[in-house]
Length: 233
Image (cartoon, rainbow, N blue to C red; front, side, top):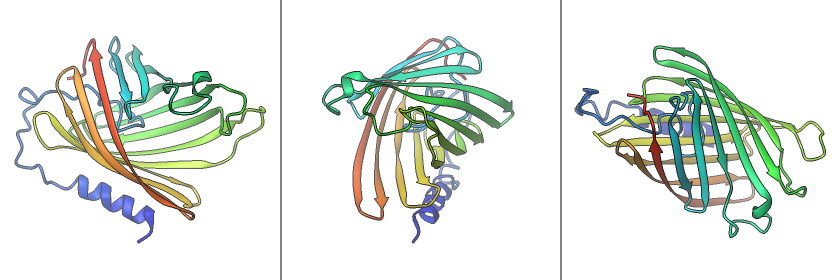
């Protein structure tokens, strides 16, 4: 089965009404403090103004996110030294602006930047857009990103698309899927897992598979996040 079709099936399965029996009274369910992100990538929802998130992805990549305004947020990350030999000179910056918010539909645009070592073989700036359809308890996310410039200042080519989903299954639990593919379909990442959270703390446990013409590999994912400030109800 082609990876793109498998990604669509994963999202469809996740959003099936498997949790129809769960309590949907918002007063009894704990709000998800990380509604602005999936496992790694962003949703179109903004971080509430004044909320500050700090955590680690894969235990080795510390990050911080801040809701500077009601519809604008900024995320920064810097992998720990054991990740790569040049990691002490790498810094990732991700500003995001929510440009549409109408009921259960949100859309956002943003930029991604890699600051640091001159030998990084990757775009140093990229633009992205993401659309979220549905409330935080049950939604589908569509996104795309493209490189803008590389280290030499030349135009960076290539398009990456994303399909994600989230499904609340309990008072403090949510299923997540996040899938990526290059425009030509030569490389694909499929991932899924669970988020367990309180009002200020969240743990995400997931797994995924990387598929390309040359290799197929599995990987685990463990994220820990603590949120301070105002969480969106």
